[in-house]
Image (cartoon, rainbow, N blue to C red; front, top):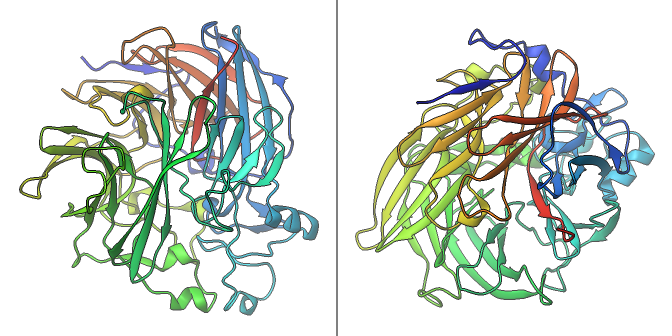
Length: 499
């Protein structure tokens, strides 16, 4: 049985209103400090205590000039703190050097990776190759430090309570100046029977690509200290947004892409717009041994991967001589061309994301590919305690229609073993962001806990924070957000020390 739970809005499969979706794209106009959120419906679980941090673009327009792609917008952190059934909101822009300069100038002074140009004459963009660290992709807590992440630059350190920006973080000296640092760390729940770890990477790319794999302590007095550090170089250009881990491996997928840097050098395109799928090349899995695993100090494995483009991986695990990797595959690299308005994109012309599982045999280097869900999906996750282990359940954002691309309007809980699912929908006038599964602190059941999701209601022209029960996606609570927050990217959960 696959029940669908609908929100208190009429849902149908006839489509959506483009203006409802695009109306979420606006500048965040106010910063709040621990403002109580108004409960609209239901009751906030009293045993849900901690902080939901979320990052995403908050500045999309300056004096009538819009970013070409929302991924070029300046990072704005939201903090929703849960305590004894009440929730308070704080939000604050990351005070990057570029943000402060552009706020003062009231115009774009830097080019964006996804096509945004400096304000003024187009010729001024030519040969200006400075990267603007926009700190807009993810936010995670490491010890007493909150880190705003953007994968082409260094993390920014924030105060976890006030969200004030402390400056560039070098993680106790582990990072060199301006070193690129992944926006997708993976948190190892304790595969080596010791304290949990944050596993992450930096990337230098070109004709050859070098991955620096790092593991940091994530518990106890040594939290934030670098535990292991290795570098591996591979042939070919690599665009790597995400990766997966098992107890023994860090797993990367090198998408089959070509980079033509000339339009970027001439100021005609952003760097990401110069990427193009090469269907004559093979994608590759790069399996890098983790330094505390049984393959420590050995060389990486390189194995042909299925065709398609991958932004995000769901999870990975090992069984005997096989490694299983679950990922969201697109048929092609989705890009927004220079003359396209991102607020008016045609979803039907973009490839949909399909959840697949690759079964890699380490003895034969062969792969078996299985589709787990054909419905367009993104932002999938497992219970954090199951990262790197075989998980039965996943939670993800999905399109309302069953096939083809579309805006994300529903949440799905998928049983990865048999395909059964529950969905919670806010269609046709509502849109969801990345769902965050928070496990119950005192339960060992994999699907015991909650799912937190920030939604945009096109009818009300407002954001709401929704709490769902993880087991069946039944509604728990809806709270009104007093500001408009654009469709965003990634977030994380930090448990309260008081409970």
